[in-house]
Length: 221
Image (tube, rainbow, N blue to C red; front, side):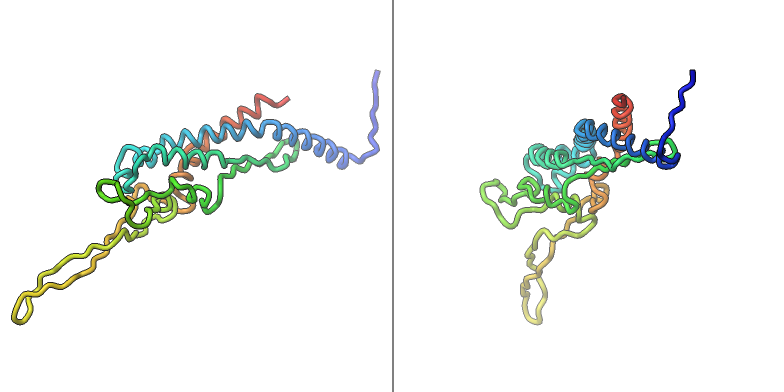
């Protein structure tokens, strides 16, 4: 027995209708697993940051001294928490082309100018006297230096020195002002599109892609 089904639609319109229906179902599917995709990205980015050379150095190594950080673990935890919690994953409406499914995933993280984390109190380091009993001068913008300043020479202050010079008839003293410069060590320098935060995401991109692909594959019905 043969059954013939005729459609009132032309072959092209029929294919388009099937594709649109499939696309709508796929959109619902991606919306359903969106939170799980966000969780995957958050876990991997947090892991990459905590294991990064820069973060390890800010807690235990050279950068802690270079930046003058006190209680770096607490500062970095607050910053990483804010950064990771700002991660979003958006899905562009899936399309069916030539029998294949195309869907674009966009990962977003915080403010483009980093103002959300630069505005945290932990992003600054108070200057104190040797006994740390008194705040002196403006706070050090250490996170801004790490994220945006690159190799810029940063003025930390002025030293006043006394030079002894020979006058015509006697020795005299003059005051000479000398600026003190510092910059982030070359291996840790950061720019708006290339800093320890963006490098952490890049370092984990293959793992993130693999885990999201596995999530999609295992949940398609």
